[in-house]
Length: 370
Image 1: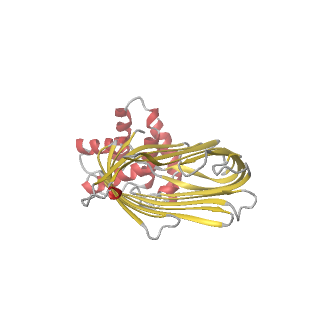
Image 2: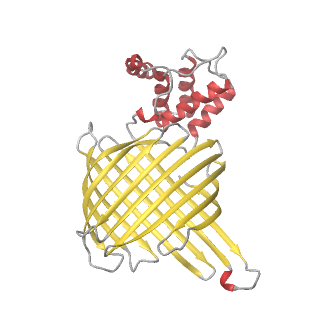
Image 3: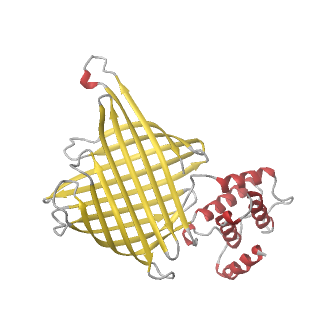
């Protein structure tokens, strides 16, 4: 009954769809709930062969990153936490901690305008004390989880490459697959979901004679259950005012003007592109402010190998004097199991008063807990 209802609902759109895959960002999920928690550790040791203690290196870095994005037609929220500790043989060297959270209430379920409230916490070994701000404002935009359609597309591509499908699934069938995968929690068991998925594929008219075999079902199960794989699309723009409850520089508490934007694009199941930016400052915002920009690109090379490129720019301006930090990173991630990663990367960084870029090559181990 459910299968027939979904088919009738989507068949109306078939007249305007042509053969081929549906653009991922055309998919609309009624609920988006994405989260990621990553622990990372790296260690470096070097003993100077000339006996110069000042050239010895004995240090490690520990990092915790958590991100959550939740969105429904009525409301949404986002959380981000990042903590980095650099520890040397002499003790704690440097640390940095940032935490941000925003709650959005949409003015209408049919539109993307919203009001928001948020808080931001900053702490660093270079600050005099903890920084804490609260903000209120208005914005426009939404994000949607397109992971179900990305998984459906990957299933289609796998079956075509193996010859289990003689042709690409029709966009209607892909959309139905995505809806069922996105509703996995409503099924009594994994077997019940797989039975529906198999029925959709085998009644599509494109499956080979004899239907799907045991290996096909096994791979479909793996695609559906795969942890750590998510794709999303959308954008938002926020403008607001806030109050600096605690000033990290030890100065007076100020009324702040703030804004930010986010943009996400998943062109294929293998690729995710992200842009993020924010700024804040008091009434003399041109003389004193902070601005951040981050761009990243993830590419899923194979089941156990992925690549990431990221660029981050941060500017802090005090009394009209700009201090910029630029950071570029390139990483290859090997995932021998679903919850553990081995990362090989190169990090280039240029901070204020550096005469040249610093270059770090790292080998690290990470564990995904969510």
